[in-house]
Amino acid sequence: MINFLGKKKKEERHTGIELLDTNNIPRHVAIIMDGNGRWAKRRSMPRSYGHRAGADTLKKIVAAAGELGIKVLTVYAFSTENWKRPDEEVSYIMKLMKEYLSKNLLELNEHNVRLHFIGDLSRLSPSLRQAFDEAERNMAGNTGLILNVAVNYGGRLELTQAMQKLASDVKAGRLEPEDITEDSLASYLYTAPENDVDLLIRPGADKRVSNFLLWQMAYAEFWYTDLCWPDFTKETLIEAILAFQGRERRFGGLK
Image (cartoon, rainbow, N blue to C red; front, side):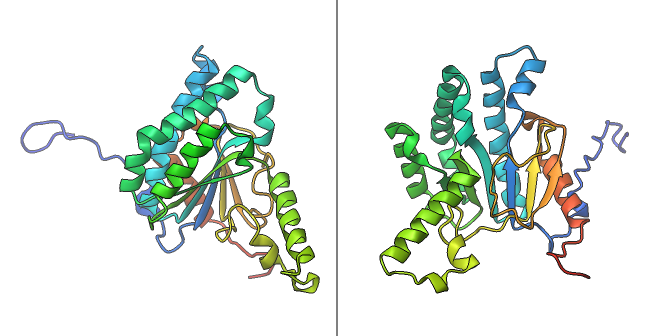
């Protein structure tokens, strides 16, 4: 396109954002950040290259989620099953998480992000746990997007630990068995009080939940894409939200 000065005008980039219903943005979005290794393999690069690219994507998507009005973003960074991977890869992922915090803490604060790490963190190194604790304290007063990063997380483990804590409170007399409800049980989950997931997004072509947020996703809408996580963009996130907005959520009832 040529403008009146005779210069080529940039074509407008349509992202789909103009189609979004701002009154129907999913409050809690969960993402299984899958496909880093496959993305790297297609480029004849080591898996570590894919994990680093995935960390860069996370930074962009956190910013996009806040801009779009999402209130809670929960991402699957490392599962309880991921310890089965080669020691070298596991060590790299742990190192990358620490590096991500040191490089992006200021920007996360500027975006008013409140950060939480969820999972059984006891298996992590003391230095990584300390980095997590310091980052959480640093952002504890922020009031924007809540970012839950699931590390050494498993949905079954979360439910088991919640039951153990609940049983301990019953045994100690702090809770009567007849007072146990869905809400009281949910209060023991890692994600409490922001438990219910509205939209699950999984890149990387696989169509399964992989032991992620089993309780929280009871009524979530699922959206899958063949894109690997490093190729995921703000436009992809908007596409997922538009698909969410096109669905009728009945929660087991009729409309």
